[in-house]
Length: 361
Image (cartoon, rainbow, N blue to C red; front, side):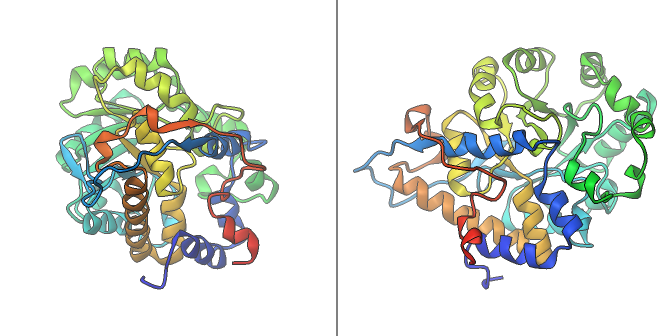
């Protein structure tokens, strides 16, 4: 995949290979898509306040999460329909993550099934569970994930109901046949997800010896309560702008969550992160690692497993290069003094981190 010289090449290839329904699903958001655009605007309205005359001849990009060393502070976020972009689905992502040296979060609704993905490669894997059954159903799936060797369990807390994704609604397009139903049936399908509560968290922590990640936290009060209940990783996310419309940018929610957590557990963040500089901004504001979702799907669409591996290589190059240009020799040395507010750029959108695409690249 050396033909992919940069991340623009990956996005361009993905756009050429995907049908309109898949492309709209990948690049769209909920309703007005305000949350989606705010994710990008939040990142664009931060500028670096770099240092100079520091020795950056050797740069360390590694990070630690759940007892594992990540080659770069990036995890591959869960994508429930990843097989839309390459038939190998989660297995291809697992092989790429293993080959590169980072962590994968496996969606419970992706293909192949989570127990099969667990056997692929040697990367640390976290199992992300949507609650499509009662407590006994949930307990069975968690026990099976533990038996399969998963490093951790992730509950997604911001998907109480399935949102209205109007690009797909207008085209009568859905990622899975199970979602080709009316609003009432969707509500029935999501009933257990909608019933998830802090009591669910208490039950899991009381019952299972597996690190617990809560994904979808956006405010200090929820972050503090999660840590008080024993949650092991707080994950800031607005589902890539695909759930609640008019939510804050995730990078804007990050500082208050980091302050509330107070260093007691790691904080992961996703939402609009498409470049190495985006990752560095999150680390400056206290994140331990950044989840990569849409960029992962673009890479899968562009070239499957090899595309994901090349995407990670390019992110590493960007992170290493820009870390040195900031005058910082290790991601562990990033801090809030290295970023400042900046004027917004015009018309942020999901791919505005790839400006050459708009210029006929």
